[in-house]
Length: 325
Image (cartoon, rainbow, N blue to C red; front, side, top):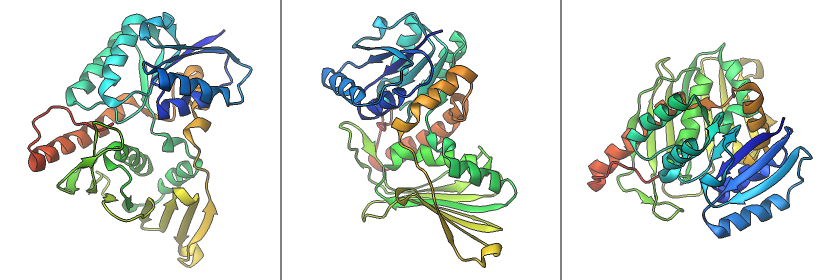
């Protein structure tokens, strides 16, 4: 059997997905849809530089969704957030889809989440959100360890790392580590937003804090100035953990080490190293270690509600859409 896999959006992140698909172990036909001819050409060149799995039977590049086959075993949507719902709607109007892998920030409007949920239910489609830290081995080990410990607090901090578009990664991770998806959220963002690296979008700095229903407190901080790397800290009643992904190191201390930190090297794989395995898992198992859409949508909506309220309070924002991607 040959599987049809489509990638919608071949910008910078989409190209990493395409490179990741080059290693897929399943017999596959790949289809790439990108309206920008320069991005389409860049994606094709990036794929040609990869070691291509012998399982890949063909790769085709299109500029419209209606050029895709009528049945798709998996669809990756890596467009900007403002186009994502319309892309999903157009794909489902054209083809029968088994499963979606969605990039984030999912959607810029609160109403988009219900609309997408209704589309998935009507078409009988499963969807997962690509917050890949759930697949990192060291975080899986920490999750298992923390099942036997009481987490007191968690923090993420660093300079100007794109809190608006990237905070969802860390809320997803904190939820995984606490085995808790119910949390309150408090706005400690800096009053003024700032332009994103992507034209037409905004970014935030400052702090988001709150508490999980389990009692674990958290803070997520993006400093407006400086060059501090992102550092994750987790304190439990039994241990202290520090993760520095950029340096690929994890440090832990507990009573058995005399509360002296011991370091271990960790693997933080790139998207181009993961997508093939993720899509193969979705196709084979009809499930994933990644977060289901309906769960991630809850996290997204909490963040989006806060962002919109913040913009309304400090910048007299009247729009229903928050321009983050």
